[in-house]
Length: 616
Image (cartoon, rainbow, N blue to C red; front, side, top):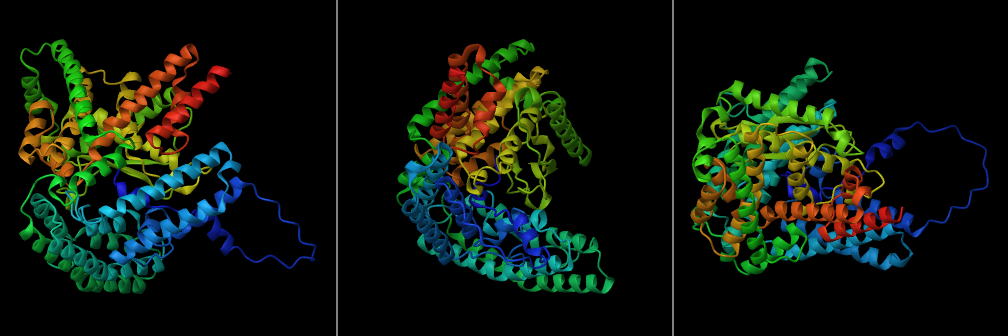
């Protein structure tokens, strides 16, 4: 899982070169010469300059995105969380699209330029289309509210390399009061209009939010995460003790004052909303809920498949995977039904890590070893171009375990200044299965999200909006496809590990059934949970977390299997058409070389590859 879809809207100006130019000393005056006539730009060059400009315009509206992507512009600020701020961004998108259509001749562009033009148009039109669902799109989900992501940004992305950087950190702590007020005002408006999130989200979200202000410096006890992070970063500075002492005093005052008031304000609004929350149903219960859901499915799958069609695909895939699992059950000599085998794997101690700090560390050690082994033994056989960015493996921090997903990928900075992170939620090791670790690692790390997302960000020949573009079915479909690449590379030697791989594919197939069941067929939360209990290997904790995620993020769960099936379909098409000319590394390069794509555009790229290879 990419954490998060919203990060797709983040766009980075490649400021390093610009800043280096700005900081360079002025050269000595030279003898005047006649100015050279500027070379005429091609339509592609003009379009590339336009994309660079529009990228910077969008990015300037989001200090958080600037920071997450390595820039220190607007370093002491936080963004605008009001409806007016959303409208400003939407107006800019609409204006930029109109400018592109007005200023460029599509017919004069190269094939590459035409693809960028189409993708930019698609992205802008999608943004404008989804804006009408502003109120139906829950402000509080099972993963938290907008406020919950800000401590993560400060801790993971706000670097402190100087006193000025630390002062910027303090400014952001102070800005939490304004931001908290804006988020709270939005929550209050939604509550008044009746657009309240399902009732089950509030307890964990309020708990995680409150954990940010329980502990030092607010009360006795362990430092809260942001305070611990700020202290660590200040203490590491090369600055005199007096300057460090002032920074710490200013940071403590900011946290005890405006920072805490911002959190208090949001908690009060969350508690108010929780009293009005009286449903756990799908979005069909909201005004125009059916149309909203159909649009989210269209967005996440990048197809015109209907919820009913997706539901049927899910049922078919669940049945197919069950048959493959039955074969492994028989191979290991288990006597009993598949459901009984699920219970055996979920409950037998040998399939679990110890529920101790040592057990958690062993999981991380094993996952890191699997990343290293894949890179050493398999990557060069399946790919011709590998990402340069580093990948870390970490446990989800305790202060956000209650709302964090089972596992997810956090992209690094495009300039390499911050490594990507494969996070895994190890809050309860009794709910973590050893047989699943290989597939999870191949999905979230290598060759899954890291190979696709890091590679995309490193492709400097693409416009930044494409390097950081979000296409759900492509991105999550690639992650699921990558799980099987591990098997093709010779891993999953233990049949139980291969069973674990199938269990994760089954989980994604089941998502097609339950997501559409909840939102299109009016399944209850209990009904959806029971389907997962009856048909998958998910632990009880993960059943609850997953169903709650689908209810509050309608449509997102449909992207994985739809994307994987399309990539597999295109691969089989290429193999059939090319025969001995088919090369897996060349196929993967075609899939990855253009950044994230809608599935129909990906199919066009594969068709062009087939035609070119046939003619060679």
